[in-house]
Length: 184
Image 1: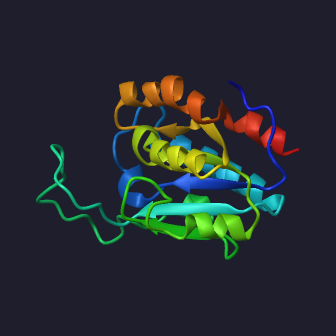
Image 2: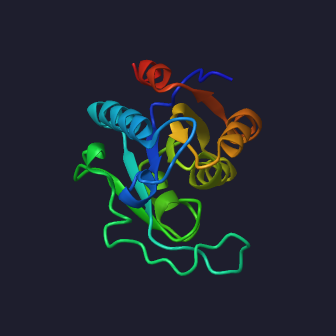
């Protein structure tokens, strides 16, 4: 469902737009396009004095998985946010150890202190960090909007499933341009 409105107390959350993840092969949108759209959204939110949250992942949750990344040591700058986001002193930064940006972080507290009622999400990977954060935001009672052209995944089928099956059950979806237009 296209986005119908943005609350006056909306925050932008950009998920895992960091050097290590931006360098992975993504589909259907190249990471550079997602980063550029995320940067446009961030600039639009900042102009309106709305919060911008920049999330990076610095590790992984414990537990066994069938597709663990073992035996690899990421480069030292792997978790650094990409410079295109033009990080500002007013931005909220969140480092996470899990897929989603809420669990084990101060994100909910930061949003509630600012009276935030809605979040717009963008980032990489659609079916992992973005979807996990969208699910938690919905469970925490926030209105959720996904910028559909500002998300991408390592797996195109998983990306499509999130956009077509999961996100419509959690909130509204629309393009970067439509969201910026709704900002007014």
